[in-house]
Amino acid sequence: MAITAAVHAIGWLVGSVVLAAAQPAAVAAQPVAATVSIPLVNRAQLETAGLTLYWQRALDLGKGERISRLSRIEENLYLITNLDRVLTLDAATGVFRWDATIAQPDIRLQGPTHGPDVVYFANILSIQAFDRINGERTMKWKEGITPASPVVSDGQSLYFGTTDGRVVNMRLRDMLMTWQFASAGMVTARPMLLGPNLYVISQAGHLYALTKADKTRLWEAQTTGPVQSTPAIYGSHLYVSSLDQSMWCFDLVTGRTLWRTRLSAPLMEDPKATAKHVYLPVAKHGLYSFNPDSGNIDWHREDGQGFLAEHQNQVWLISGRASLLGCDKSSGEVRREVPCSADLWVSNQDDDAIWLATTEGQVVCVRPQGAGFLRYRSAREAAGRNTPPSTRPASRPADQDFVPEPATKPPVDRLRRSDAIPPVGGNTSATQPAQP
Image 1: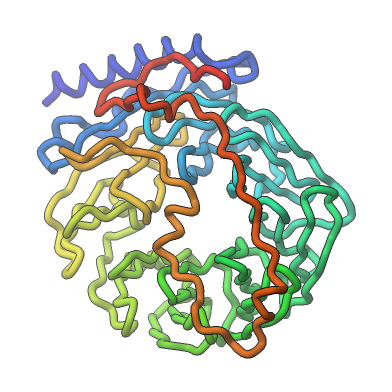
Image 2: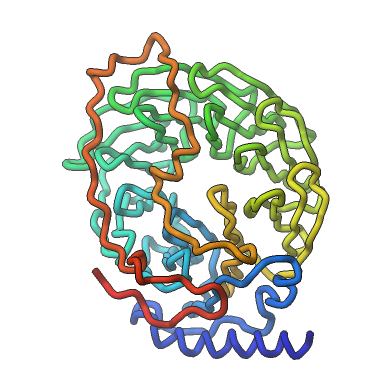
């Protein structure tokens, strides 16, 4: 076991040296080698637990720079540092795509969120858009409107909450505001687009379903306490965790409360919804698994800190003692445990991949053994698990009032060519992707 750990440590060190030469000049400024004393996860222990190290790499960070957030959206893995720099990797291979400094340090970034071919970041000073593939900045907009939430886009408009308690629609072609909606409380959570509708929740716990075309209010619902999390949508259900110590489930069509389950502490984290489970971590209390139809607590693990991914009859969690827990989905009983040194992770509701990272810049992707290639799935395909409302509330405008979105041409992505086959483990190539 000691020999295996030593080999992995040497592998990380070699990978860091090779990858340093592949980073652009902006990344190489004041370079500091990533910490490599302890491998993030041991390959042999992974294999014993039925997992495989799909890819791994070590990033070079500047002096005093640390990874503070990790986010995966569709084909990209975004690593955001304490200096408000974004490093973007291909999620399926770990290959470096691009990096950009979005704002000055200590200015909180909202996002990332994806549009049809760009990624958006917002802060109190501006909204910026970058090409998802090559990182070219395509927009930097700063006017009198100050975003308070991440922005979402359908390719025609931007939708976001503002610091003065409004939700606005900004038309992309000329950045003119086409409508604004006054909410009861500031909207800081990411708005949710689904079909012709927009769903937003305020910090005061007011939930609105609006038509994105003209802000017609389809319904309004409310929790009994403030909300600091982003709701989850699966099928025709919308799940909200609230500081009133309750998990709420609302009907997406009517806004009717389907169930409410009270716990013993304020709920501040985002719920994660899958076909048969809703997962919620609660600080100092562990992780809960709810039945999505009844709201009953199927199981609770005090050592669970976060949901990672599901695979067949097993769900993978990150524990408070920095280990991966492979648990039975129906009972929560631990079947496998793998020690790791991850500080950051991604909650992945779309497939079986697990992404882990350390603040010092080590990043790995772990998958079940025998899993097929991790292929890119577009937002529209992934959104197939969400069922747009089919029952028309009386307040919904007629179909002829809705202008369908034009078809968008997908960006050229050379990492997604038919001859680009992702690795099944080990270090990735240090070669950066060719620009389209």
